Each structure stands twice: as C-alpha cells, then as structure tokens.
Amino acid sequence: MVLEAFGQAILNFGSLELWFYITLGVVIGLVLGVTPGIGALTGLALVLPFVFVMPPSSALALMIALGSVACTGGSMTSILLNVPGTTVNAATLIDGYPMSQMGQAGRALGAALASSAAGGVATVFFAFAMVPLIIPLVVALRSADMVFLVLLGLAFIAVLGRESMAKGLLSGVLGVTVSFIGVQVKTAVPRFTFDNVYLYDGLPFAPVVLGLFAVPEMIALAVMGGSIARSGVLDKGIGGVMEGVKDVGRHWWLWLRCSVIGYVIGVIPGIGATAATFIAYGHAKQTSKNPHEFGTGRVEGVIAPESANNAKEAGSLLTTLAFGIPGSAEMTFLLGALLIIGVIPGPEMITKHLPLSLTLFLIIIVSNLMAGAICFALTSHVARLALVPSHILIPPVLTITFVGTYAARQEFNDLIVLMAFGFIGLAMREFGYNRPALLLGFVLGTLLEKYLFLALGVAGPLFFVRPISLALILMTVGVIVFNPIRDLLARRSRTAMVAVTATKNPEVSGEG
Image 1 (tube, one colour):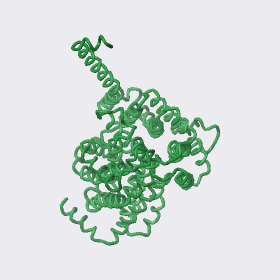
Image 2 (cartoon, helix red, strand yellow; image 1 turned 180 degrees about the horizontal axis):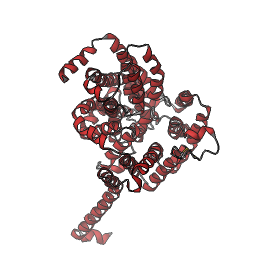
Image 3 (cartoon, one colour; image 1 turned 135 degrees about the vertical axis):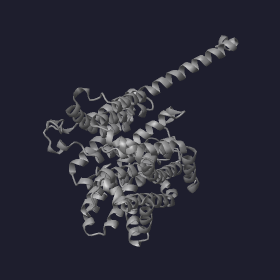
Image 4 (tube, rainbow, N blue to C red; image 1 turned 60 degrees about the horizontal axis):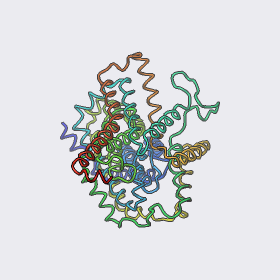
C-alpha cells in the first residue's frame, strides 16, 4: 500500500502545471523572505483566496513551496544586514552578521543555505521514520507539559548572553514583560494598554523585530561609515560559499542534531519555529568546546539555527495532516486550503489520502532543493552587499524596512512601534544588552501565559506532577546550570595546572 501510494505521488510530478506552481511558490517565498516585515504568512494570506479557483493540487503545491522556503531567503538579510528577513531568522544573525563584518559573508551564506536546504530535505525522511516515536509523544503532551516546554525554551536565554548572563536574563525578562501588553485572554483585563485600543491585541511581531535589529544597525553603520565588511575585503566569490558548504560537512553531527530539534519542535503544535531556532542555537553553544566565541562569528552559530528552521516544516506538516491541528502559523493556511477543497485532515489523511500526503512531503523536498539552487547561483553576487558603502546601502534598507512594516497590516501605529523599538534596540546595543534574548522572551512570554492558565484550570496548582513535566523541569535546570558549572570546572582545572607547573618549576614562581 505504501509503495503504491509513493509511486502515485511520484507520478504526480509528471505534471508541468505542478512544477510551474512549485517554482512560482519558491520564487514568491524567497522574495518575501528577503523583504523584512512581510514573511510567509502575508504571502499565504494573499494566496489562500485563489484556492477557490485553482486546481487543488496546484494550490497546495504553491502554498507548501511558498511556506517552505521563505526562511531560506530570510537568512540572506540576517547575515548581510543584521536584519532578519523573517522572524525565524533572528537567531542566525547572532553569528552570521559578525561573519559578514569579518569579510566572510560568502562562507556564512554558504553554510546557511546548505544546512537549511539539507535540513528541509532530511526531515521529510525523519517524518516517516520517526512517526512511531513522535505521534505517541504528541498525544501524551498536556497543557502542563507545554508550560515547561516553553520554560525550557526560555532557559536558553541564559545561554544566549556572550559576555553577561545577568544582562541576558534581564533582556529576556523585559521581552516577557513586553509580551504581556494587551488584553489578558482569560480575564479580559487590559494590561499596559493606557486605554489605547491599538494595544489591546498586543504588540505586532514584525515592527518589534525590525525595530530591535534593522534600525539600530543602520544607525550604527551610518555613524561608523565604510561598509559592513570592516576590513573592506570579502572572501573570494564562489570559493567562500563552498567553504561554508564544507563547514556543514565538517559539523555534520551538529547539523543532524539541530535538524532533529527543529523537526521535533515542529511536530509539537503551538511552540513555533522561532523558538526552535533559538533552542538549536543554544544547544550548539552549550555543546561547543568554545562557547565563549559564539556571537563573534562562529560558523556553528549559523549552521545550528538554519538547520532547525527548515527542518520544522516536515514536522509541522505531519501534525497538520495526521491530527488536523496546525503545527505552525503557516500550516493554519494549509489547513484552510485542505478544508476548502474538501479534504478533512486527520488520521484518514494517512490512510485514505496517503498519495496526497506523500506528494505534499515530496513538494517540501523539491522546494528546498530548488530554493537552494537559486540561492547558490546568486550568493556570490549577493555577498557583495557587505562591501557596499554605508551611504548607498542605508537608504534602501531603511525604506524597505518601513514599507515592509506598514505593508504587513496597513497600520500606521506599527511604524510608531518600529521607531520606539529602534530606540530601545539602539540603547541595548550601546550598553551591551542582549537583543535576541529580548526577542525570545517576547515570543515565548505569550505562550507561557496561555499554557499556564490552561494547566491551572485543568489540573490545579499541582499541574507539574507528571513524568513528562518533571523531565522537562530537570532539563530546564540542566540548561541553566550547565554553563556556570562548566566554567567553574574549567577555572579549577586551570588553577590546578598552574599549581602543578609552579611545583615542578619553583624558579618560575620565584621570579613571579
């Protein structure tokens, strides 16, 4: 049965119309990805009405392709401009942009594209191989477990801070506090809204992200002058790009682990790809032999989040098809499209509509390979942006930032939020506070509150007395204490080595 369905799925790709819509979706997704403030959600919202008049397979192909590759395009602006093209790419800029400043833009782009495309392809196979393990886990998760899963994500704030854990934690707390702006869902009580109706729904994501990163970076670049690549030298053309591809091969074990992280978090509804990329980044930093070098331009800091961002697509699609529960915000639109064409997602998708399900997974593979090929063809040229003088680069970047922010919702107040967070981001940059930590707190704060109220309502104050919850609590504590303990042991080891050296060479200590 499975082989027959797989054969039917392969035959579906004999249609030129299907290939046309996959290509169209990839191109639209890449364009939206490199346009700050727009992203895949806007594109999917615009495409959804056309489902009524398009052939069902073509409509689904267009939506899957568009949603699968937007973050691939977004990695380019994250690395070159320190402006996340999509919110999912925010973790990539932590090390990607410093690499551009060192003249290694091609290498960073090569590593990002290779790990992203490979992660998107490989996790389709994970989706089939890990179904017996993942589906029972998803079914077993309760709202209480989701509370501690979100807390686990927040714990990685302690890992993000390169120089000061205290500043990183304070930035994260500020992000969580900002996420509480708006009407509380359970009690309907407005918080921090100052009787402003615009704030009742909370702060929109795009202006916050672009304000934190795009505006401060362009101001700093204007003050500094010159170009993004401070040395004025760039790694040579395609050679630099291929060096990044080789880096993914050298760090294949990290790529595999982070791809699995992205896939697993993609399977779990309600967590989101942004959290997946930050968790993958934190994991890479914690398991590195040189964790203190992260944030200064480590290629592992690019490979980890980029492996996770596309890997979550297969997991999200599996949850959407098998349970009828959107695995991500993008999958909400796919779910709507399936209902429009008369296909009801759920267990029957894996039985009665298996050829269609397999076709959708194969579209993810084709889309990632196609996007990777297009981006690789352009990368050596795009990397030259790092050499463009600031007085030429800044005006179009800021124009796209402001236009993209307004275009997302046609709301003038979004521009005010953009400028406000531009000043906040500039102050944080100046005084060494952690902007990615604030962003992670902002993303996960809303989820934490939502699941906490659900858990208290269902299970009461002892909601944490569950095996999965207890395991997640232990993992969270482990994430928080891992780095301090490792640093303490490293200091003791160095002290012991100095003592041994002094004992063996008393004349050295005497001179000192």
